[in-house]
Length: 205
Image 1 (tube, one colour):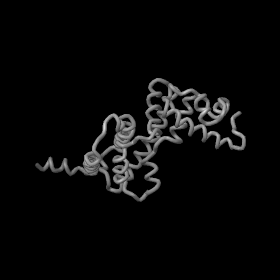
Image 2 (tube, rainbow, N blue to C red; image 1 turned 90 degrees about the horizontal axis):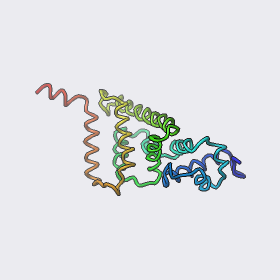
Image 3 (cartoon, helix red, strand yellow; image 1 turned 120 degrees about the vertical axis):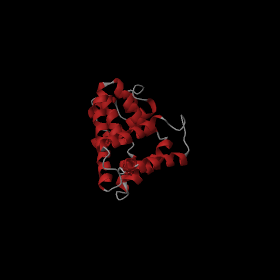
Image 4 (cartoon, helix red, strand yellow; image 1 turned 135 degrees about the vertical axis):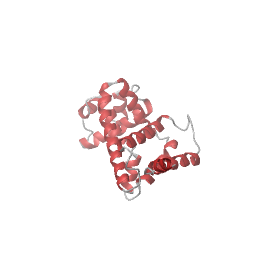
């Protein structure tokens, strides 16, 4: 019941997660039935329950496996690139995000507000993402890119708010000029990189 003929259990699980990511992103958590995911994956309902205990587990599993991780992917591709440059590259892309998978995080966050079965694993997921970004901020601070006086956790929270907010405020709801947005991001990153110069100048005056 839990495996497609000629396909390993791991491959069946991956097929289910891919189908879940697509269906949840298109129909939303509440609008998706387990049967819809099974049909999209080409398996029986029983095959799903052989791998996942609930629809909530499917949602968070799909998010972990197929949710967008642009910063992590870009960092993995070019680990020698400066952290501030990585942030600018991702930041410039955020207002233009249109991919269906980008809505997966929205569905997970909305579902977490209504369903404690979703909220529990989502707290873990968000915590893991925040910890990873915070560690990246510490690397940037150690390298002199960011002000060491700033809280890495607060910086990580700020990045999460921007990334997840961009999944809600899509270009069809409100668009921003690319050059104006880039100029604003550059100003923000410059401000974050300052090491108390503004405060010292103000004291001297």
